[in-house]
Image 1 (cartoon, helix red, strand yellow):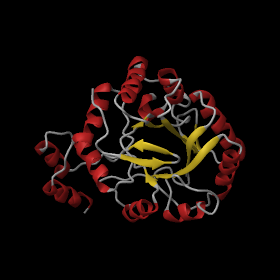
Image 2 (cartoon, helix red, strand yellow):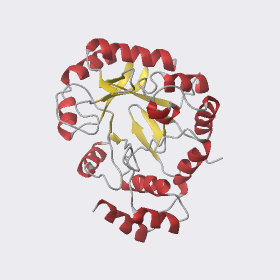
Image 3 (cartoon, rainbow, N blue to C red):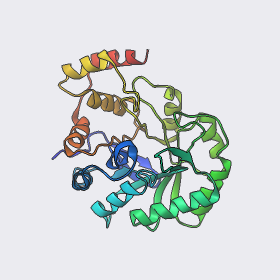
Image 4 (cartoon, rainbow, N blue to C red):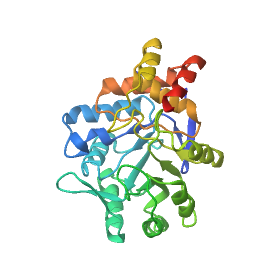
Amino acid sequence: MTQIGKSGTFTLGDRTVRRLGYGAMQLAGKGVFGPPRDHAEAIAVLREAIESGVNHIDTSDFYGPHVTNQIIREALHPYGDDLTIVTKVGAKRGADASWNPAFSREELTQAIHDNLRNLGLEVIEVVNLRAMFDVHGPAEGSLDEPLEVLADLKQKGLLRHIGLSNVTAKQIDDARRITDIACVQNQYNLAHREDDGLIDKLAAEGTAYVPFFPLGGFSPLQSSTLSDVAARLDATPMQVALAWLLKRSPNILLIPGTSSRIHLRENLAVDTLELPEDALSELEKVAG
């Protein structure tokens, strides 16, 4: 079984987590909606992730909805002291599987209580506020009101730290007038590098950056360069893309998701994948 650890650790809230984590989104059904195709495999994936050394799981109660959190609880509760579970609020799912904003005090408060109940927790280590001004990427808009709600719930002891997802640099700066920000979770990969400057700034400040869609997400990255490098290194394109992210900056925490133990092992094997200088030089051109 793959044991992770070579890539090191970074601070997330009050915790020190391994940089290779696990994202639970794919444990839900197609379109992140409804139950998984194979419930037993979903349980097995989570348990193997923990046995392999993963101690950071990213989830949300709007995955499913409720599905992934309930599976996490079934598979792993009671949780080990070393495990950090991070969730997201700010969105809700429609009956048609649509993704809709949920920023009101009532919606956010309910979301926190739903996460606590479905995960079987008394307090959540980190809660990310997902900005929903544009579902497909960051867009300016005030997050003051929802952040004030989360800061109040933090004061009441329901959560320990607050992060941001799908946000701009200005929104991060504005948020820090209201509360400390433990992490930022945005789309970032070899080809989508709008956050290059932000990552470096956060690294200097000691703030974790958690990229999602390492291979492009809903519009998969098509790169002959990536494929060629992967073939030369006897690796998959996903492994190379993840290894590049680990190399990019020490504050990057990875949360690749999968519903398959085979793919989980491939993802965790990235911890031992070395990218030689010639490969790094080639990969840098993908963004161009």
